[in-house]
Amino acid sequence: MNEKTTGAYRDDNIFALILKGEIPAVKLFETPECLGIMDAFPQSRGHALIIPKKPSRNLLDARVEELQKIMPEVQKLAIAIKKALDADGIRIAQFNEAAAGQTVFHLHFHIIPAYEGKEIGRHASEMAPVEELEKLAEKIRAQLP
View 1 (tube, rainbow, N blue to C red):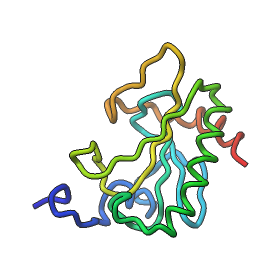
View 2 (view 1 turned 60 degrees about the horizontal axis):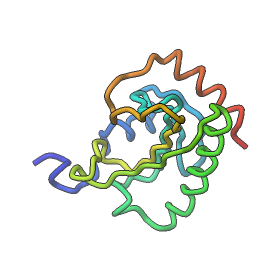
View 3 (view 1 turned 45 degrees about the vertical axis):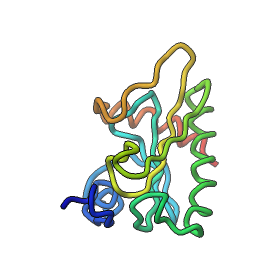
């Protein structure tokens, strides 16, 4: 059996490894509860992720107390991205289990800017150059409170 069928949290998932500093990421901010990073496989220019530090597989097994700490950070980052990149809208996405599209089994939230006349791309289809992500991150960081 693999993690997609067992329902167990595994601490070797890519987000757990990023949180441990074992895999690099373009960081936007960090709090005691979560980490904000640029998505390496963006669906849209400025796509970011918020990764809670407490291990949970997804929203279905997350503690309410942790979610209460994370959701204000999701809002802050969404506002910063919209301002920094002049996005027309923001899509917030969060997937629970493989059947719903979850591919990394560590709770995380996608903040995806939407631009009029431009379709949002497929999930995890193409890796962005780190230099491009760093430039976008600099603009976003400048808008964070």
